[in-house]
Amino acid sequence: MDLHQFLTPPAETARRKGPYDRIVTSSRVRLARNLKEVPFPGWGKKQDRIRVLEAIRPAVATLPEMKESFSETMDTLSTLDKQLLVERHLISREHAARSVGSGLVLNREETLCFMINEEDHLRMQALRPGLQLRQAWTAIDQADSALEKRLDYAFSPELGYLTACPTNLGTGIRVSAMLHLPGLVLAEQINPIIQSVNKLGLAVRGLYGEGTEALGNVFQVSNQMTLGESESAIVERLEKVLAQIIEHEENARATLLEKKTKMMFNHIGRAYGILANAHSISSKETMNLLSLMRLGVDVGLFPGADRSLVDELFILTQPAHLQKQHSEKLSAEERDLLRADMVRERLKSVSRPIPKPAGAGAGLDKPEK
Amino acid sequence: MLCCICKEKEATVHLTQIAGDKMQKVDLCEECAKTKGVNDPTGFSLADLLLGLGASKEIEQAGGGAEVKCPRCGFTQADFKKAGRLGCPDCYQTFSDALDGLLKTMHKGTRHVGKVPESFRHSRDLADRLKTLQKKLTKAIEAEDFEEAAILRDEIKQTTARLGSPATT
View 1 (cartoon, rainbow over the protein chains, first blue to last red):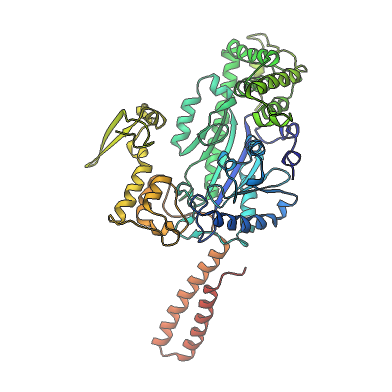
View 2: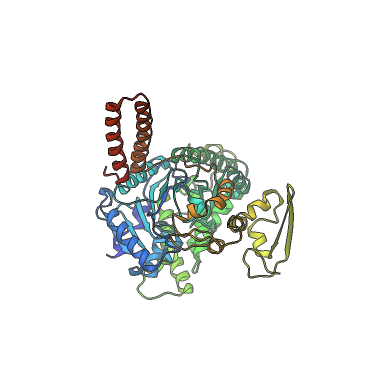
């Protein structure tokens, strides 16, 4: 099956709506599971992994929600396709590096994704646009309950679900949300926020998860502890913290508009200027500038422009997505040229940011909650 | 001296921390020191830093010098030190003493709270039932109620058989 044909077009993905999607771009709940008496993928032999893959893949396929799914082994996917999946946040970078004995099953709606033989035998995740942690948990809980009837999970009444890394032991759950926080970054409040979130036992990571940069002011917040706390308690704790971060971000934006109007408009205006006029631009710079433009759309500086235009560009300008639109192999320099061409073309329909008169309109610009 | 985290670069940062009556020493290269946040005095604790290293040390100690090897998958303490991950689900049993301390520092608790697979809920119920039946049997024998004891014995037999076979629900 052709992955590119299967994946939802970026234009459509960018238009998906969810609660608080001004700030929360997506919610995810992942569960780690392993089969009894079989070595974990990192330690097992190729035969062990193939055996696990052959047990899990058909079991996943029987789930009613996995009808019409995309199901492949990692060795049949090209490097480019794997990168495409990483850019869509459907698989981890670690999984993209896997080959024989690992697999992937993804449903039509891209709301359920099963990674087979990543760090654990099975890592299943439910994804939702906006802030929908509870919905994501319910969905993955249901899939897991159906699967446990067909798969013999490694489980201990004392330690819970047994995982390759002790950090995932117990519930094997990772609840996370992707947050767009340009306001807190511009107001230089992001570091104290990250520190206090860390103190609460939650992790803050970059755009592509563990060990990555917060490109485009996108941060991923997730639980770290998995043992000694129930799934619903973890979901609840995260919901509370996220609600606070959302409030801080909204406040930061409102304060910037009111007190640092010039600084904010300067950033957004320059971002638009570069994006609309550049002839060569890197993926990293594009993301960081698109983030500022998204902020501009959110605070009403680009009347008529929709957030989905920015979000679509955010997906399309990433290296693998750009490469996929061209048949010949592109060098990084060539990609930078084509990326700039694409962004300029798309922004033709977006007029220059219109700053509201300072003082008079600033208060009224305050985004609705 | 090599950095004790990456074991590749020369260690230039040397730290000593005294916790209780124990002294811990760490030697790090500049890069690892930075990533571990050693330069940031507020967020730094030697214990956190040593989480990975200390864990494998504990495993070594638990083995009493002799190498502990997982009977299922052949995984050893040295492998854990290298990979930071375990070999198979049974390793949790094999290295349980050593892991206990590690889990305490890592998680909210050391006992699982949360979802339990249906089959375990099923067998847990059966195990509970078996215990009750056995108690009743003892009482019945003491009371010389052999009729009742015979019934109980049959029930125990059935329950044990169900417990032994995998749940079919």
